[in-house]
Image 1 (cartoon, rainbow, N blue to C red):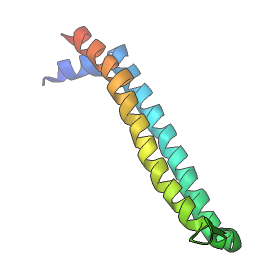
Image 2 (image 1 turned 180 degrees about the vertical axis):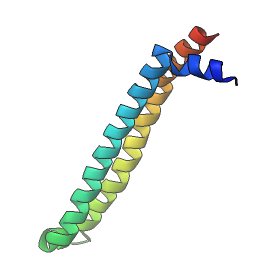
Image 3 (image 1 turned 135 degrees about the horizontal axis):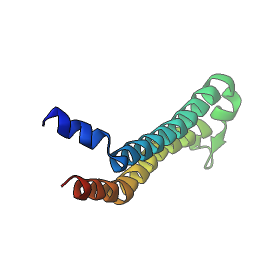
Length: 101
């Protein structure tokens, strides 16, 4: 790809919107996951009694349940990103491709 073509793409407002939108969404989801994970780690470190409390008739503890919630939330956030990528980000990419062609 020639430098002039790269400059034309990089300077395109639709490309800049795509990068800005995708980046801000990805950073938001990363911050949410970080908050969930850090919250879990702080509970493990400072709330021993809470994490050791038995649930489900004593079969498991709150810590195990919350750990599973952390894992499930990672899958959910990934699904949310994929849904957005297949919808909004793909539409922005198609608009950019039409604009460039």
